[in-house]
Length: 119
Image (cartoon, rainbow, N blue to C red):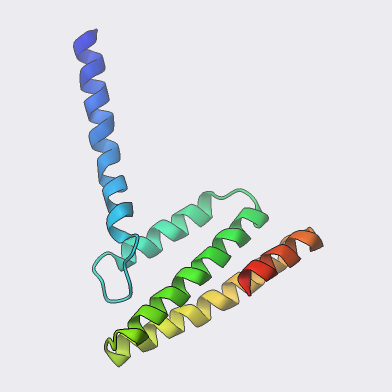
C-alpha cells in the first residue's frame, strides 16, 4: 500500500508539473515570445471555467491591463513594428471584449466598479 501511495503521489506531481511550468514560463510572455500562445490559451481556458459574468468581467479587465503592459513593453523597447502593431491590435480587441463583458454584469453597482477598475 505504501508503495502505491508513493507511486500515485509522484505520478500526480509529475502530471501537475507540466501545466504549472507552462503557467510560470508564460506569465511574462509578450507577442513574439514562444510562450505567448500558451499564455493566451491559458487565459481563454480560465475564462471558459469561470462560472459568473462578474468574475469573467473581472478577468477581462485584468487581461486588458496585461495587453496594455505588453504593448507598452514592446513600444518602449523598440521591438519590430510588426510585433508592436500586433500588440496594439490585441489591446484594441481586448478593450472591446472587456467593455462588452462588463455590460453583461447584472448589478449596476458592480458594472460601475468594474468600469472604474477598467479606466
